[in-house]
Length: 319
Image (cartoon, rainbow, N blue to C red; front, top):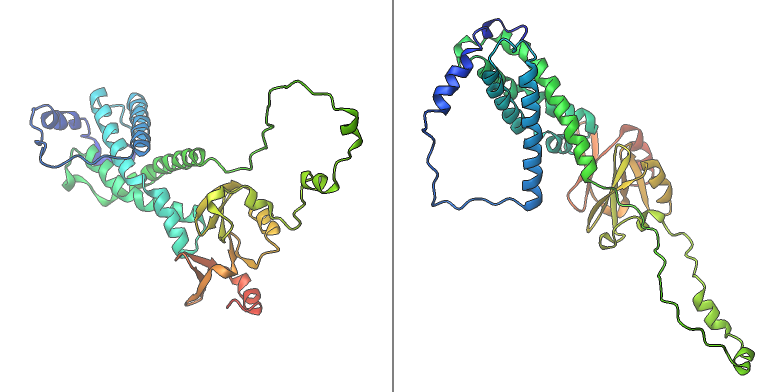
């Protein structure tokens, strides 16, 4: 790896780990403790993600980037396997931590995820440095860590982007289903008699068959699953999607926030932030902290209020 002068003895890595992994001594399993079972969907997802990480480790070991081609192939394979497992453990929670940070601080989602990546790169840098030095911690200097950190951050950022794309694929947006025409078997048509033809259809029956218009209906609710109901709490923006929160749960919908806000004009609510719309009935408390203002909702969620919205909300009696 470039810029890491004390890592010239990295080829010792293979010998060091060979003596530790091939001597046949492994920790005995405690049969008295029941194994923890993961949910089938989560287990398969984790297995798939680990398979992708190990495949990437294999490719990188064959290529030998960052000045590692001087190492033997077994040493590179072992090193990149450790990097993959350690990096996965550190960067796997980045999206969850970024979302939590954005929700608590009012930062944009991308800034919060970037900060989470920067934090996750710190322990990963220690893992990489320790692996390349053969666990010779005394030989690792601050200069070595500073040289390693940007490279780890770049690779970890790429892994995070892949996670984000995979998460977006899993969260299939909820869209209104097209009505399906009911197919019925053809039956023999009975010819009406002259007397039946003379009888006109009652007007009341014709009115029942005609669709009843529903003025003022909000199309957004048609795109939500029925079990979520229409007790709307808030809407948050997620890139090209919006996440609609009701008292019964939430759903992701492919729609721009400004379009949703336009549809919700008949309701008593407001866009309090460029990424949030809130129903007034869902607000339980106004939270003020130094110069920040936020709204605590009935479900415990805290929604940030932008400075540009404070005056309007105060005029409407929200604050």
